[in-house]
Amino acid sequence: MKFVSFLQKSQAKFGISDGKNITDLTGKINGANTLKELISNKGVEEAKQYAKKNPGDISLDKIEYLPVIPNPGKIICVGLNYSEHVKETGRTVEQNPVIFFRVPESQTAHKQPIQKPKVSESLDYECEMAVIMGEAGKHIDPKDALKHIIGYSCYNECTVREWQQHTRQFGMGKNFEKTGSFGPHMILAENINDYTKLTIQTRLNGKVMQDAKLSQLIFDIPSLISYVSKAIPWRAGDVLVTGTPGGVGFKRKPPIFMKDGDKVEVEISEIGVLSNIIKDEIS
Image (cartoon, rainbow, N blue to C red; front, side):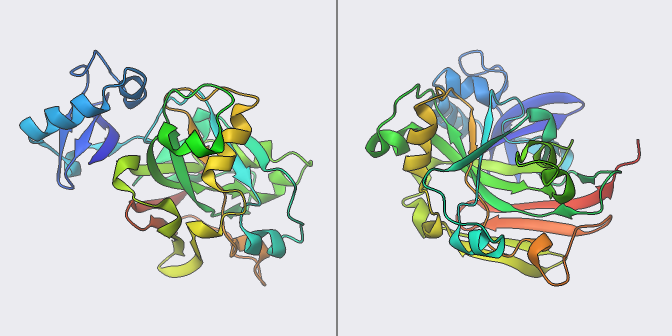
């Protein structure tokens, strides 16, 4: 089942999509008004049963997508987590994961514009897999980590490169408004037999720019979940963005950056395709 967050007639809602229509779950399962609340209230199983009995009647053509989790408590991102990306950036593999954070305001959604900032000509694509967490707490053993995952989605963790390079910290280049696209939906973890068998790809105007396998992660998902949990408790609806493979635009010769009107797609096998058009910031 595909869990989506969306706007209908300017009202924020969430539900389950069958690929054509949505069953609206807003306020119907344990009082949950958002997907984050549904996860927190442990209502996913009940939601599945409700959707089976109540086929969707909201057309996907009539809604505006929101980020899968519009209001996460935290978005924790991982840098330099594929060997080819480490190599192309001239870095070395670190002993521990490179961790940084995004704010919710930096997000946008499937079929919504990714905003190219006024102050930059170096907006770069980064395909990544997003992990949506349940209420897991602290000090998680890696062997137990996967059972705390509710679902998976696609993420385009777009980066404003010259702002990223202002300091050693990645933060500013990663947090421009409407530059982190998250969607189109969440696929339940129980429906993915082995995430390491998945493939991930970026296409820019139809041309493949990045192409990798999730098995190539330097720090795998259980180790990332465990590592972060030693410092910060995982809460329901938190998002882990797991790193991008080689092929980013700023390391190409000549560099390739996204511009107004470009179409960028992130596809992860068994999950879906996240599609956006680049739009210049106008105000």
